[in-house]
Length: 203
Image 1 (cartoon, rainbow, N blue to C red):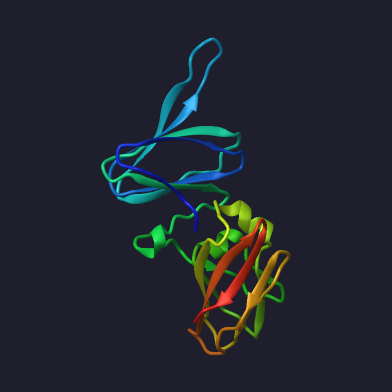
Image 2 (tube, rainbow, N blue to C red; image 1 turned 90 degrees about the horizontal axis):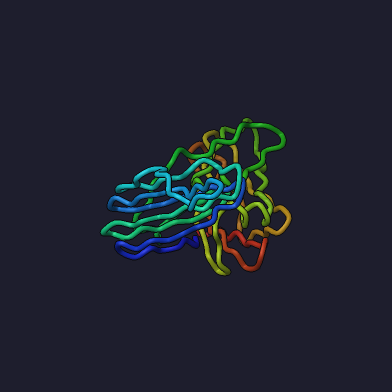
């Protein structure tokens, strides 16, 4: 997953587009400010929060917003998108609640669901779960070509869950979990071009 690095005691000025969020991860106190302006006055900085040994994800900004990040002694990482995620190469990351998809004949996952890294469902029959479009995935966070993100799908009943493709997304390998409660499948999502992704079965 692509994210930006701010080195020790460094500062970054980031423009967050309207409707998107910013995620900031740091192991030492890092201050986030919103740049605010008033007619005939220079812009000033309004403190949003201090991030310390955690990952902070803002709410979506209504308008395009300039955010200033002042990193502490350990530096900081940040990402921008509709569902920004910082994996830090798997060495350290937070794990929020899995995305649970309600059972039904038409089950779909959003980009935000995938980026939780764990998708669960309790199917009452073998079910398909449609992946989000490549465009939705590309908008969700900052990706570079060949960036990848691993996620798991877990069935909580004795029926298989099978991922299906969507526009701009293809699947390589088996797309289904086993047909027993607790069966899991592991996938790697890789960006190959703008709005274009391949999902590989890896476990």
